[in-house]
Length: 195
Image (cartoon, rainbow, N blue to C red):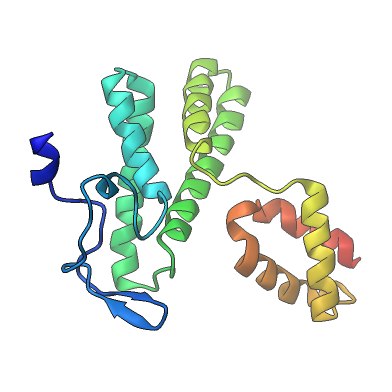
């Protein structure tokens, strides 16, 4: 019990004040009971934190395939972080992570097709196992019916009438729902809706 009192709370961002109801709260002077440290104060688990926790779990379980895949994911995210320092970074960290994971997911899907066509089933199985791990961290994708409903809503909002307006609809769709859509499939649906 004494060890709980001496431990610091590690899940609080202490570098900036927290804005609540128009007044600033300094987190350094905020008194927190010993039981509140186990609960997140500023934000629910981000995808990056879930990936790190899954890595620890996979290592403890000695799951070699899952550990290797998560390490690949972490390396790709780290590379994207480095790229974001010099270029334009997304406003939200989850957006950046989802972009990286969607790219990895798409690459693995294409690899599975090529390995299957080339008769290399063992490599296709390895890629499929990686896809299964990556998929657990991606947000749930919208169904085709939900995507069509979104497209119709954006189409009426923009006033799109022909395929010439496809760029406007796609831009809004990507801006609002990029993490929950496969944009290559969505572009086909937009084109069909505008023809």
